[in-house]
Image 1 (tube, rainbow, N blue to C red):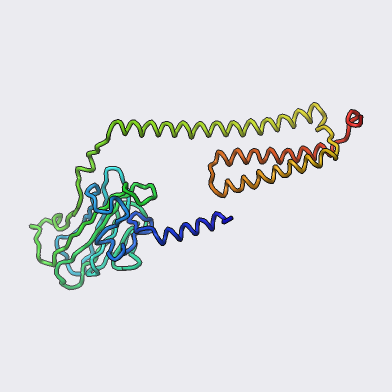
Image 2 (image 1 turned 30 degrees about the vertical axis):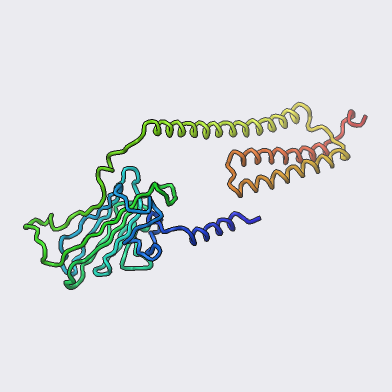
Length: 318
């Protein structure tokens, strides 16, 4: 039988071989998606495999035209009606220099690009303009707002934003410094506030949540009470027998040995079953029940030994 760690390793290796790229991955998305770049084509494994206007991808602090060797602070934000966090990737085709900030990192396969280093939102980083006039600087930005369930599914939504910064001296801000930088976005802002929810579906979901809640809490009280009663019964029996009956009754070895063997075999079997359930994450309710029964069987072995060692009474010798 494979151990749990071996099975997890095999599953992990298979997932690495077959899983598609994910912009919501905690360590950042991969650089390529098949033969195309993720930053240019997005990720086919999230959402419906195409960009979605339901997620608004924004970048603020973008200059209208760059100044040579100037460093600008940029912020990438994601907005979605229900998904609050996700990931991103941005690239300027190595014309300038992008430097990661908190929550972001350089992309391993392309150090000129940066992405998230942890699932989040509102990433702040810097971009330094080139040291000479190279004309228009193009950028590719892709953002993915994930639903947080840990899967690559239709509940995620991603979008792509392509923009550029003009060369030095090609734009004017009419003397107002605040107009020198701008915020650029892509997506449908109306989708952030308009949610078409079927009342019947919403009520069904609410009832399912209530049923799950009652089931979980009912199980907690039932199995906790069962465990307490079982332990209390054993303790009570031991106390009354030793306090009022002078200890356990004598059991002849001719009877104690086969009884001890039976109870020992039962204890060993239950212990193996308990270890199997724990190794396979079979649920705490079943594991607790088998665990308590294992302790009860082990207590039976102890009782057999205790009875075999007890001094025989006159009635035992008749």
